[in-house]
View 1: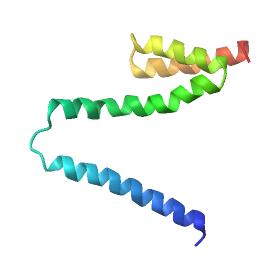
View 2: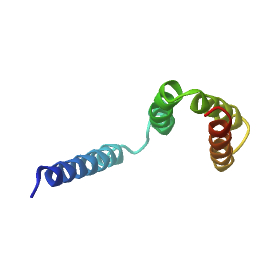
View 3: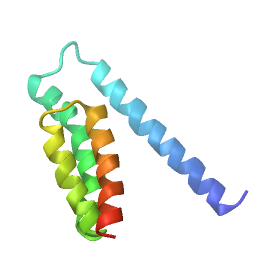
View 4: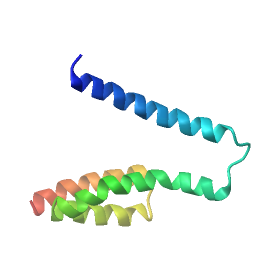
Length: 98
């Protein structure tokens, strides 16, 4: 097998082990401390921020404006509405700004 295949298999195995490992560790506790639960609930937002922030800063003004619009929409609307507004905003800003 090629080196790429081995890298993909190793990455898949590492991902599986980290996910099952977290489950095994947390399943040993009868209850989770509220601070731990709050931290675990914050993980999706942190991951999303690491994906969106570089695009907003380094991709251009249309992307930065879209992030601002979507962030404001997220304060008042549910997730799917924010996604739709962000999608329309990026199309509009790219057409207008370039």
